[in-house]
Structure formats: C-alpha cells, structure tokens
Amino acid sequence: MPRIIFINRFFYPDLSATSQMLTDLAFYLATREFEIHVITSAQAYDDPTRAFPPFEVVQGVEIRRIATSRFGRARLFGRLLDYATFYIGAAWELFRVARSGDIVVAKTDPPMISVVAAIVARWRGAALINWIQDLFPEVAEALDVVKNRMFGAVLRGLRNNSLNVAWCNVVIGTGMAERLLQEGIPKDRVRVIHNWSDGEEICPIDRPENALLAQWGLEGKFVVGYSGNMGRAHEFTTLLEAAERLSANPDIVFLLIGDGAQRASIVCFAEQRGLKNIVLKPYQPRELLKLSLGVPHVHVVSLIPSLEGLIVPSKFYGIAAAGRPTLCVGDQAGEIPRLIEAHACGWTVAPGHASVLADRILELTGNREMVDAAGRNARRAFEMNFDQRIAMQQWHSLIHEGLEQVRGAAQ
Image 1 (tube, rainbow, N blue to C red):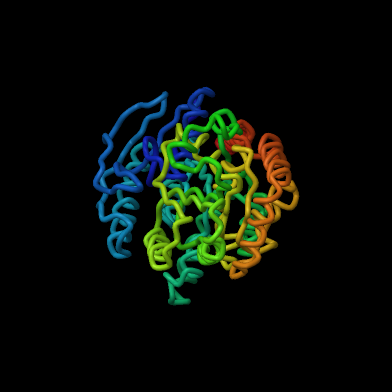
Image 2 (spheres, rainbow, N blue to C red; image 1 turned 90 degrees about the vertical axis):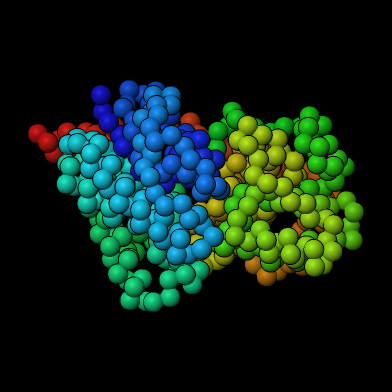
C-alpha cells in the first residue's frame, strides 16, 4: 500500500486552521487505499500546556507526536526553542519512518521545515511535496521580525534549495505561485491547490433558524463579521475606525470571533473609545461554524498589502461556503480581491479608508437585496471552485502522479 507521511506542528484534534486543513486531507486519503502517517507535536496551537498522546491511530491515520518544548507563542525566544525542538524531533522521526518510494508532504509550520524534510527525504529515498501556506522568511521580513538582510538572504537560499529539490511545491494562490517563479523555482514544480471548506459542514442557513442570533443578542441587527485569526498579518485599524464612525447607529454591530496577537489591542481600542457596537467572541468549535459564520450579513477579510503573495486569508472559503459576501480590506490587485471581483461576491476597500468602508456598510445595511445577491454568488463560486471535494480530488491526483514518478525513477 502506498505510504504518505505528513509533517506539521499541529494536527487533530487541534483546531487551528493549518491543523484542520491537514486533518481533512489525511483522513480523506486514508479512505483511498493509502497508508497515512502524520508527524506532529503533542501540543495544541492555542494552549501549549495541553498534551496529546504520543501515538494513536484515528480513522486509519497513524499519528506520531514528538516531544518538544512548550513555551508557546507569547515570546519570540520561546517560540524559536519550540521550533528547534520540533526540527530535531521531526527529523529523527521521519528518518525512522520514511523509506524508499514514500511521499513526504511537509507543510510550513514551523517555518523552514521543508529544509529538514528535504534532507531526510532524500537520504531515505522518498519524494518530497512542500505544501506552502505562507512564504518564510518574506513574511517575517515584511512584519519586521527578521531585520537583518543577510540573515534573510541565507534563510531564503536554504528555503529555495529545499523547494528546488522537491518533486512538487503546492501553493494556495496564484500570487504565491508567481513569487516562487520569481525566486527561480521551476514552473513544472509549482502547483496551485486552493485551501477549502467543507460545503456539507458549512452551508447557508436562514437567519431565523440560527440559534446563535438570540444567544448573542444580535436579533434585528445588521451584523458585520470577522472570524478567525487576529494575527499581525491582518489590518484592523480600518475596520475599527469604521466601527467608531458607525457607533451612533444602533442597528449595526461588529462581531469579531477568534483570537491572536492583535486581540488585546482590539479590546483596548473598543474600551478606550467606549464602543458598544463591537462584540468579541472566542473561537467557535468546528461543529458550530455553520452557525457562527451565518450570523453576519457580511464578513470582513483583511491583509496588509505588503503580504500579498506571501499569505492567502483562507477564511474567505468558509465565508463563501456560508453564502455570505466578503468585504476585503486590502490591495485591490490581491488574491482575495481578484476572486471577489471575478465572482461578484463582495467588495474591496483600500487600507486606511475607514470612511469608505463605513459608507459601504451603510449602503449594504439599506440594500439587503445587494447583500443577498453577493452571498448567492459566493456560494455558487464556492461550489464550483473551493469545496473540499474539489481540493481532495486535486490532491488525490497529485499524489498518484507523484507515486508514478517515484516508481518510474526506481525502475
């Protein structure tokens, strides 16, 4: 039976976005006559003190959890130690598990794991697929985490070498593919497979049937939503200033669901300005996403323009699955704005233009037909392009292609 080995710092039952994507794919492939192994850490993304069993089999997937340090994301030095201990443990576990003819799929958490995977996979005679969710060190440079140009160049060189020796590099957007081509990665080693949502798990729900509206006291309100990671890659100033401009309107509420590095500053902004129209909720369990994504009339997605081509806000796919339109705060030429324009499923506002965003929200508040039409377009685009079943088929075909290549090289 063909063997696929995945490497990522987080996996089931962790609920982070990168974990959920990998969980979907691993569990799917396990039903398609593949032997699936996952090398991951024993900790949870949002709680480094939580520990999962070192080994278990779930839905036919062998999960091998390695011991690492548990400093979490609060401090950079602790995070680097967590990365380093994962590199060491993952390299050893991959060396033990991998064998000639296997396919190793390395995601991008922690950063630079492709370098470790490339060395061990080549040593053991396995083919490597890099599944790239973001481009490091470019993201760290754009966020001013990596400030030394020479150090960044060294990291980029190591990363590019691991991509060049891989059989294939899967990216999640066309802008990201263009970036890799600019870095000299051969075109025939770059594939675009979008991230996804489960269209059966998340689907449009009529507002009167949504129990969360009453639970959260949002009945009769026009709800502008944000759902997901509140990390440094996302631009919140425009959204918050728009909320302040609309604070006198009792019919409009801003619902922010999730957590991340900027959540504390969002809370501080709302408290300092006495904004009662901003409601914050924690991450919702996966089984409630259909309801939580269905609460807003329109969702906001944001990305700092300098990160275009380096990151794709994958929350867009869940929003589209829920049949809701997107208000994107970002570069008009960016990945999500291009999708929005192509499918007429939302609107884009440039960062810093809070008055434009506020005016757009007011317009949508008074034109529910426009909102509903964009939502229907979003669901239609989702079903045709971004449903989980489509991505699973694309991955299944890619894995088979890789196995044929590996077998051909061995003969």
